[in-house]
Length: 237
Image 1: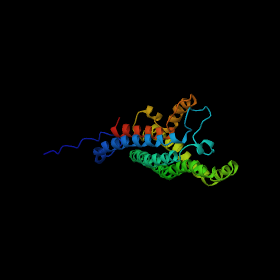
Image 2: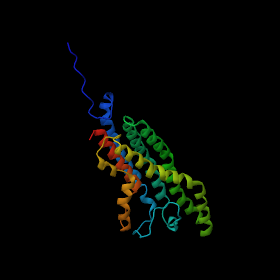
Image 3: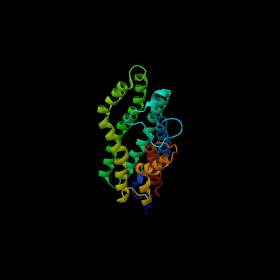
Image 4: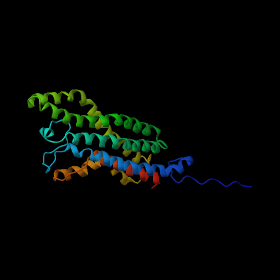
């Protein structure tokens, strides 16, 4: 009696034994979108309240005098939103690397290394953004503005390199690696999926900010787009 052959896997990149886990990629993608949006909201408390100003920026390396005039819980909330939102975004990137590994092990390893570095530099960067205003609130009540600024700016000598690494991994590293995977068919998704990354999100959101609109964090939105990419890849579209 002839034994019937097993059907071929529905997804061209994933081995037969992994077909049953396709719904897992979709589920984690949905979780990744929710997580990324939470992380994106973490940037909102770091922006000066009230009517947006044309030269208004997120508090990064600069010192903003308005920090002393708002409740400290504003920056504490920002930290917790980032703390809770970031893990889901990194799981998304790790699972994208798993899908890529079926066709290109080297590229998948590069994405995993980039994601690993982004895990700790990402939270470290946001901690810096939250600690500076909290520290400035205390210092501004006890010493002149110039001395307060000197203390805050001294933090920059320690955090400058981690912030640079965070930028390179979170904004550029993942975007470049995933784009290469799509272009080389290591990640079997339609070519328009090249637009699902943080670089595109900042190109879309920053003009809106220039127009005076309140926006969520472009990086968080960019990782939400990566999660959409994971759903598409997991569904085998």
